[in-house]
Image (cartoon, rainbow, N blue to C red):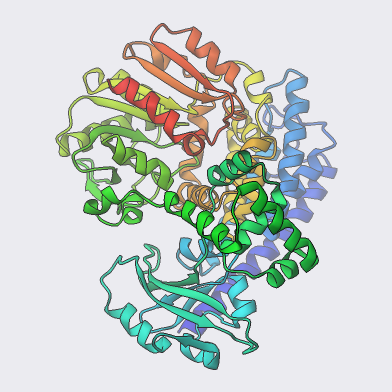
Length: 621
């Protein structure tokens, strides 16, 4: 039966691609003869539009269909559409898409939908993606000892492939305090969520004396319950703050920092020289210079002192009573049944007796935070109530799609009643700010204040769009002036994400934001961004489509009757919601206070947790 199903899937995709080729050829012919996509002439009112005589149009139509064949063509489509938008607006015509272009967009979207439905997609596997960010070998293991996933380094260096029995795959190259099978048996008998190290394994696959020491620890993956363990190299984690402190205090060069990292990771002089493609003499000279700058007498003391710094990258021991801190940083979501029949997903983040704050997430966003932020929530005794808005995560969609803001406000109040919470502050991230404003206007007695981080403001002027980075600018202007084209644009982005090209989406999103792009070099933050992409696209186009229409509008009237204090914390380097527009919004309302962080962009939520939570506590007082 599975063979037949697979054959039918391939057949459906083939039919869809055949239709695509036919549609593209017919589109070219019709366009050449001045006809609309529906076959009628363009002389009527529907055919008349700002792009009617635009020579770019034929190329744009081709791009619409090409993304059905090649997800990489999404970038070309955005380039063409961005140029077309600029030309139309420069002419003063805000009707960006005529009937013919809309019809082609709908047809291309339908083809994309057919192809996506025909694919047999595995469930999201965040941990499998996360281990690919590890520069050292990393392997996910099941309780039966099967390799569930291995990063590229493990495949190349240890010759391990997914699906293999790990003990058999590693063979004679393994030596440990107990055999590998014994360690896996220990893994199977460990309690769920036990993150401590269960044992060490020394692997020398080539049996040439060049071994790698790995640690086996418990692991969990919500997307795949078969994951039981993680086999990874015992290597210290160097945060940016630690490296900056070392560099500034000891006046170390970048090369010297890299040598220190290699030494602490267990590499000898010969290995460091080989890795850095330099001579042994050069490495020894660098170590001598490091010892002089740090005022240490031996290489052993250097390793001991630098290794000590890693202790300060760990979670504080005072949270042990709350359970393993890493588990607390990613608590399990819960489901709540609303009176309208919908299911609402929500997560409680922070200590159980903490001060409650309603957290409303943004557009391309999730309700998971970086460990450093969660750590501070515990230190400050703050508990976030974080619902997933409709179409995000596992939350059902809207009963009334025409009024999403009001419906979400009603859903939230019902959830708060269920949790026994009355009046509390609202913490809105990005688009979540708008939803918080509507909640405060609709239920005045339930919102004591609003704290906005990188938040949306009414889009009143064209320059608010023109100054954005390209991806956000295109989305906003399309939502505002050509909403019929939104589905195919969103579908193109979703296909790129689902084809494992999140890195391309990240570069596209922050193409014009070098500060944020460099921030995303941090593996934890990058994985968090990738999770945001998965969250907003989990149920297709609906979450993004709903939000982008709302945040791209002039919602100034929503502020009428909202008299609670609003504090905005925004980055000076923000390239989505421009600081100038936020300043105008703040200046227009007596109850709005604005604080600009000079060295932050859109990722301010992760880059400045301490300052951000200082401001949150100010509105909670």
